[in-house]
Image: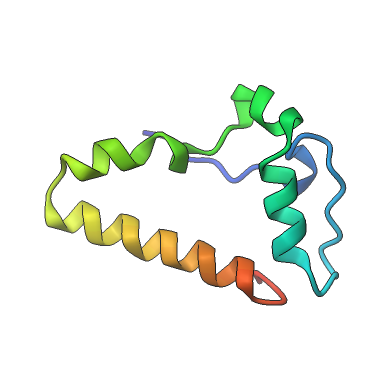
Length: 81
């Protein structure tokens, strides 16, 4: 499985200000936008993974949980850098 990190400006064309104090809110808004939903080429693999992870072993489940928590932390922080 190949993962890529789309640039924020690819999130449906919704503007995201990387220096903003509400960066997480902007990323979530862009991620949930209709434009991003319709852009299957740059869609997030995290959406399709939970059912696969649920059928997998503990190592993969822990790895997925670690990444998921990191994303949540990043979105709650003032910066994801």
